[in-house]
Structures are given as structure tokens and as C-alpha cells.
Length: 257
Image 1 (tube, rainbow, N blue to C red):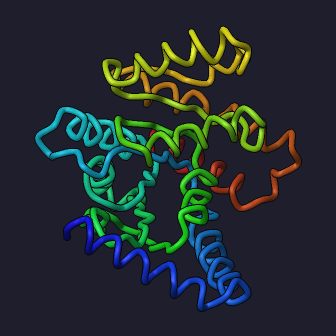
Image 2: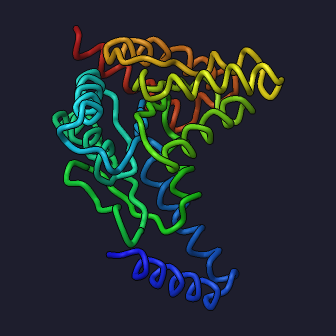
């Protein structure tokens, strides 16, 4: 598909949305949220992985993503991605190796290019609205791992950081994978945003930059109990989400006994 064809498709879609009217759109938005809440609310400990849809399977980032989610799946963590190709496919692929024990989840988006569903999911949903999909990508995860990517990946990174900074979510870890790729960005954040008072020093501590897959898994595991404590302190011990964490620990204890 060339650029002109793509623009024509987008114009038609935009016209259809306008013609449908805002009132009817609300019902579709509600349906996407209801579907997500219903199917993802009791998943148990899960990690969301973000990254480029354009990463080739031969690329080191693709291979690292498979390695990481293979390790996470082996430790009993579900993996959530945007459901498409590239890093998303790689992440689902690693988790899919453990499909009898964990969920490999793909939350796809309807696009006229690039985005097609990968073949390594045990549970999948398709969204029409980016904002509904983004809520589901972050709402039920205890950690976000950000591999190199483009505008969409950076949007998701800063969305996650904003949610944590403003305490809309608590106790969630953010890992950046790709030291060569992300070091200039972190330098900008420190030398410009921090030095000019746009963020606080504590905000820098929200980000862990590493290429060590084992350390990511270890840090995620160590944060499990602290996140359960946060839920308890918030009076959420009776929720499905808390119960899924508790069940996770019980199953692990039985398996290790």
C-alpha cells in the first residue's frame, strides 16, 4: 500500500466516524472497555512488553524479547503485548512456549498497514480506539518493559511514566531495554527536563535501563509482594486482581513443595 492509498483509507474512515456521530461511538468505546475488563481482570501477575512492530526476527532486540518472555513465562508470569509483529510477536513467542501455564495475550489495533495479529497468542482482542487499548495494556500489569521502537512505543513509555508519576498506578516497574538506543533519551531527560525543573530527581528513579534479562525477571519477582501490600493498604484485598496474585503465590508454593 502506497502513501496515497493509505491517506484515502484514513479519510474514508474519518468520514465514517463523523457520520456515525459521537453518541453511537460512545457505545463502541464502552464495549471495548467492558470486553477488556471482563477478560483481563483476573489474569494474575502479568508483564506488558512494548516495542517496534518493524523489528526483524534476526535483530538482537527481537531475540532479546523472546529470551525475556521465555524466562518470564517460565516463572509463571503472563505476558501482554500489542499483538502485532516485531517486538510484540517476539514477546508473545517467548511466553507461548509456556502456554499450558501462562497466558500470552495480544491486544491488537485495527490499522490499514503494519499491524497484523501474530500467531503466538493464547488470548487476543482487537481494538478500534488507541486509548481503550492503551488502558488495557497498562491496567493489569505489574511491570512494563519497553524495547526500542518508534513514535507509538515512546508514546506508551511516557504514558506509563506519567501514570506512575501522578500515582494513578503504584508499585509498577518500568524497564528500558536497549542501552545504546535509549541512553541518548535518558541523557536528554536528565540534562534538559531535570536540569530545567520539568521533573523531579525522584522521577528518574522510575526508569531502569538495562540489557540484562535475568535482572529484569529478578526485579519483577521481588516486586510482587510489595505490590500486594499496596493493594492491601488501599483496601483492595477482596478484589479479583488481589486474589489472582494470592492464587499465583499458592500455586507456586505447591509447585515448589
